[in-house]
Image (tube, rainbow, N blue to C red):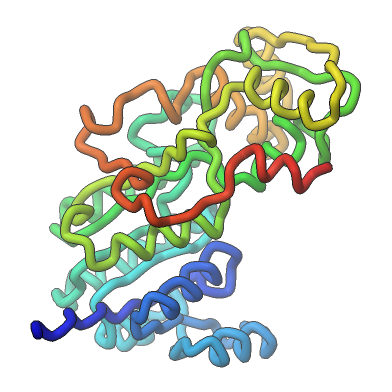
Length: 306
């Protein structure tokens, strides 16, 4: 019998965050020797939780070149799950990966929408251009990569049914942006992690973008309102906000308070998640590639809000 292929060793950066924690869990469960780069300031509770799960903890940070060199030397795959606001902090890591020359795959902190496909560069204060900058550096250095594009995490916008300023879904009146027909994609954090770990030793996803578009989670605002109305057994009074009205509100609201509206404009007016076909741009459809991954649907998430 042919010996089972050895699992890649994985380094996760940002392991103490929500997504990073899920990534370490699935990496361990999938049989990958898993390492995490941990700052000295990390709480003892998080430190113990990761250690108890079987993660090898390495002290260091994205600003400490020596610690990065040591960490990268121990693994085959590097996954970054740092917050989007720190995305440019990956530059030193990329330099170290390039110099090591031994990393088989780097999965940067991309997630979200494909920054190369967004159409809001004049509104987002560099949010997506910084991610594009990191992608171009990776590609120019010839580093093997996989990009993960999952649309919106369910915890963003969905808990309020896309109502800026609200913390829970409306029960009487709802604001619909545009005509309500443009579709966005929502995926739960834990499911993003499950799909991401699937790519680690899959040659089909090397130097590709993996898009997560679960069919049940591709929803327009009209779809979301209809789903919610069915669950609360009540019709909501709709107010429609046009593109121009939303743009005016975005420009009148100071940054960063306007970013929630910017994301709404991106996905529910411009259609930045779904206006393009995955295959035509050389991407891979994660839900088709890995049909065994079970994921939470938008309807199931809305059930948790009742």
